[in-house]
Image (tube, rainbow, N blue to C red; front, side):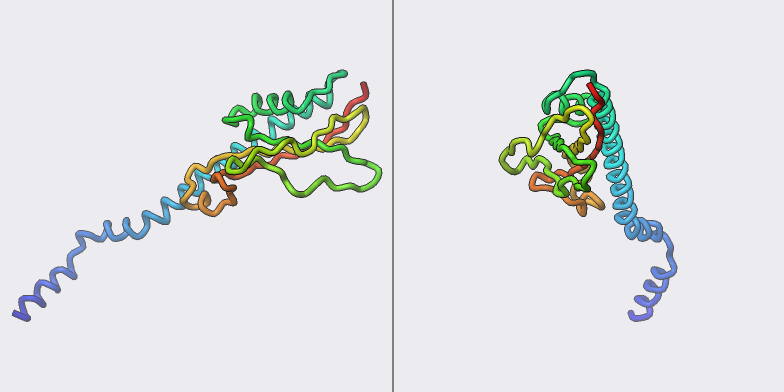
Length: 177
């Protein structure tokens, strides 16, 4: 009886029928996590590049505008139209402050972004500049992760609604009118 069991065990040990299955089961999860992380980084990069471009084009229009002083809602709508990926424009928060170019003054460091899990807050600070004034514009948009529980999507800083923030800033000087 023992000889028969040993014979079967030796035959089992020499067979190589399931070796590919073992390798697949060991490598599938790390490779899939790597693929999910690469997808997440790609989407973050595309979203950030589109937000930056939309803010730059909108700031260019504001800076070169002849006599027009667009208000908060119009600027937000322009950014949303140019970005093309922001689902709800109410998720985009803008902050525009006047800076003094002669005395070193840093813009506020804390970014104010919308959080769907909290009550709506009004505009933080939005001041239209006059001729030759240095202005600082910050736009914050919220996005949902592609894979929220896997790879980078699990480790990215998210708000209470499970969304991450992308922030774009721009400084410009109002042209003389």
